[in-house]
Image 1 (cartoon, rainbow over the protein chains, first blue to last red):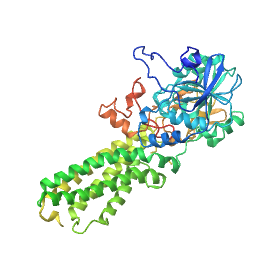
Image 2: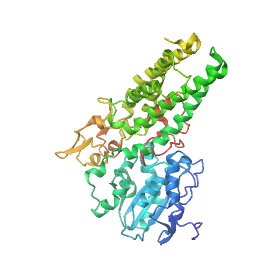
Image 3: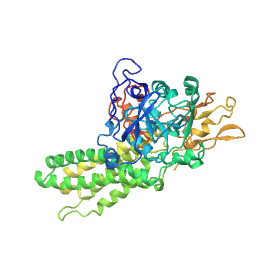
Image 4: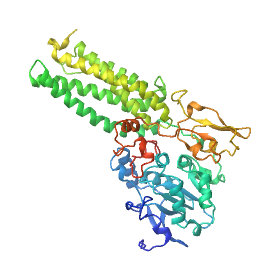
Length: 381
Length: 110
């Protein structure tokens, strides 16, 4: 292994000593495990990357998709080499979120290119561009710190199109002299883009939201919802044991089974079915889509196979017909943040209508649920 | 897929436009197009207010209230939780704010 302790620009550009406010020390990010060697350049040795994803990369992707260690999946910013890039090779710019980085390098099989990784604090390109960390200032300072001019004669950089919310191409040119070329949205289109002399096809420029992508987001919707669902189910179980007219155990068992089933249905309706069926559910508002799946789930509750001896009273069913759609609608609304086409103004408008309705339905639903416990016979209608 | 209609804040000043075409290049939803050498808004309801066009317009001919269309971010802001794990509306200006990654499969909110 090469000594990465020296102070040549290509090595030290990845580790900012102080941030722009000049106070706190920036995090030290690890070199990615995909580094296989080094390439000597006028700016010092540059880490060279494998383009193949190994099982650890793939496990890592699955892991962060489930939200495990997701905020700690960053790699060292700076300059990297794919293949044997030289002075006439293109420079691709990306973020230091390892999944983004891995997807990029895996799309570059057989190519000789430079990769300039910006410090986005382990956040993907689009999100970081929205926050401004994948931005003009960071790009310009990385160009300078990595001494890009002594590595390549190319006077241009290729940026992912989704980096554009954070980067002003004309400002980068003013500040660094380099031209920004916005490449395709998806890394997998880069070989075709390079082969076509930096021309994109119209399809490369449009952000779609296919079912594969929607499905891959489900775990991050599901895990937090299940946690909250479990807490609510536990509270309702205990409450029912104390308030009910029967023994603590029998009331708690009944309420626990029904609440677990109901909340499970609501979570599946809002956090799984909404993402999967997004384009097919009626209405434009995500909360409305979630309400439909919630109503379907509540209908499912009536037909749910409970053990004998557990029957739902009319009041209880009414309560859940309010609670399940309210919760599912809220989870549907939350999926706006993961979608690729919702606007801030739109979400704001949707929430002004949806959140009071969701809260109202939940409050009424809860009141009816308590009535069902307190009334003799479970409020049989 | 289409979101709510008649709500986005996108504005184009045709007089300022010089027809460089950057907005049409960066727009991920074909909202901005180039017709007869000038930028035009072709499908404003498809705009997600990402702000790419405005940021990359050298003539400042485009204005949009850029932000992330994310309910959780708005809730966090309303609750004053700007430093929690997920993002909030203030994060755009907060240097040290953490925004969790990639919904938007390699992009996305928070």
